[in-house]
Length: 195
Image 1: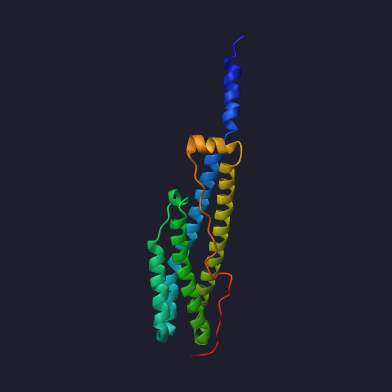
Image 2: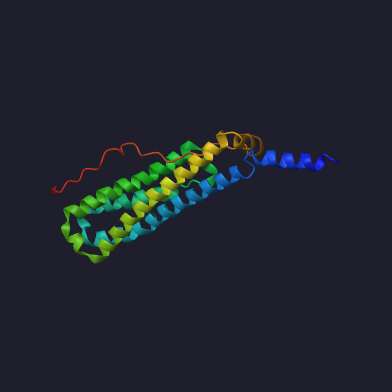
């Protein structure tokens, strides 16, 4: 009687329980969720020039706010994080800060809209504002989904038996989730008074 088939089957079962398939699957899922985050930020970046152009036509006196939005968008577009850099907290933080700057400038832009009610009568502006709001919600959903995928991946590479395969075969490193931007716990102040 040959023990080779029994040993081969036992070895295959043992290796299957060590994360040979589940670790790369979890990693690729997290990378796909990161691509979703980047896609939503790109969508926002594509909308901003249209929004700025529309507002510029109605609120020429607020050029500094419009310039700030445009510059923040340009800075955010220059900061890229590839899926291979997701285990580098500094890179993810740099990306998040650039995107947060865009969000802050958009808050100021919305304050301009509130100070100049004639802007809200423009249908194109309303459509773009609604689209931007929808995009911001989709960014939040994409970030939440990414964080969920990162949590699943990080848990998988740290728990038995997948931790064995993660360390030995892949040299897996934890990925960095998104964190709230400092000050995000404080709601922005809306001031309806003209200055």
